Length: 224
Image (cartoon, rainbow, N blue to C red; front, side, top):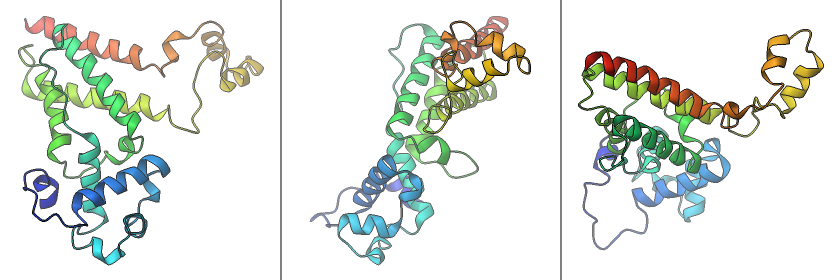
């Protein structure tokens, strides 16, 4: 995993090699963005770059290391929230917006950034930014970190239902039509979907984010 943290710290060697870690990672990201993460393979990357598969292993140890490099590169530099107005709440709202935008550009990211693994410096910087947004609120360090985890989880959850093949729960959706046809079996769902559903139009992201931040506001008020 040394390459994961050294990729940006290591100066460029001159003359530049025609095949590099950055070229491999950028090509892999382009494939994942277009065709999904399952389409990424050493053979596919080598073909797209015009090299042999074995030549890639002189730069990237294995598929696991490649994925780690892809995640950190796609995540990009963490957001600078210092100038965002609205205090801690405004900073976390902006954080959620920027995180969702990165995940929209790279829709494979939410699914591959779960589980126990070593994170790279850019991805770690995103967590740092979320924790730093709550500095000075009176929350303990572990509470700020827990709040960051909740925020990541909320964006991830609402992002996942926006992917291809999922069904939005809105009043005009196919699911709502099915429920209306079986209103006797699902009376409360039928009632909930019978009128306008603005809270559901973004898969409840804004609604859930407001409730999460409202809860933090109560805790922060207690500590002040």
